[in-house]
Length: 488
Image (cartoon, rainbow, N blue to C red; front, side):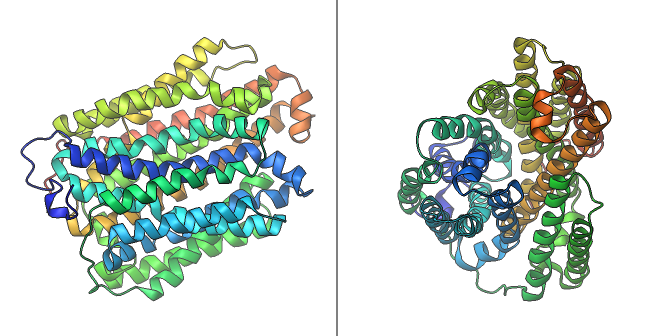
């Protein structure tokens, strides 16, 4: 495979099919990105073990998760500029190295403070890996094959949250917790070797300077806002002073960035002029609403299996596999249909499937058949596989090839914010439903001893929120372009 983008098949491909070069690029990108996504859910399972190991409270140990998330989100706005300035391959390799260094140090952590610090370092590396991978594939594929190529990068995004609990549960149950970080090293080394040999080298574009003022506004704004959202989820609402102050301060910084970016135009850290394009704007809004529903559901599902059905973390991970299978089966088909029929046809059908599956969970009890729940998860997975990545394909196909790095940064920032908001909001709604239906329950231990039927009712009521969000997302989805737009 030659090391220039000109020979990757971009733009002048005679066929819509993915050729060998594109599939090779996809394999390299998936190998790198799947580590960062798996890492989140693998560590989630290990939180109780880490709390016991370092003899610390839940409010402290949660920073192992929150610190990673904040670092991950705050570095995303830099992705577009860094990719243009240094080239996608260099940024990809550097990000992998930072992530692997953070993984090695986290495995060697001697205190909770050290572990949190090394998780932040991991997050800084992980934050750029997925956006840069999307940039590499989108630039290589061209608009005619965007649906197919986005289905490739969608594999780790949807399978990661499903496989993570299985892997994490197996590791924590059989070997030292340090292996939840060490497992990244062999995979990462292979990913680095593959990237060095197979990723195309792109000539950097040093003409665009770094928007320092935008960086000073947006990255801290996102981090502070997500901190406030995380605190709201942890403490059950937005009433606490530090939660309210952080959320408002973060929003104020983001609003200041929007004002700054509208004046700077294409030279801004995130190019807001991209949202003037109908295809990009409707796809971004669709992904925002679906992200809220997806990440919210990902919070509810493991909790239902563990708190209501009293399953172990490993068993919970295994029970969630049908969702990943549904996504894996649907994504290639949805990608092909998006290229041929357009996202306006494919995405609403996917939403209908996802909503149908979610409806089954609005009726859950403490003895609902696992066969029924697995079938519903399969349908949910198929629906999600036919929505998020096809909508993202439209967004990429709506902008010029040179604007793809900036478009990637914008879309990933939106997804991370949607994930944080969805996680917090669903946790808050669930807690309020539990307080209303099971007032005697106090904390996790109280829920474990409460009547399972009452707790299940609280979960069923909360799943209605996911159904409602999917229904609202149908509005921008119906405004997506009928056919994939021709790249400017």
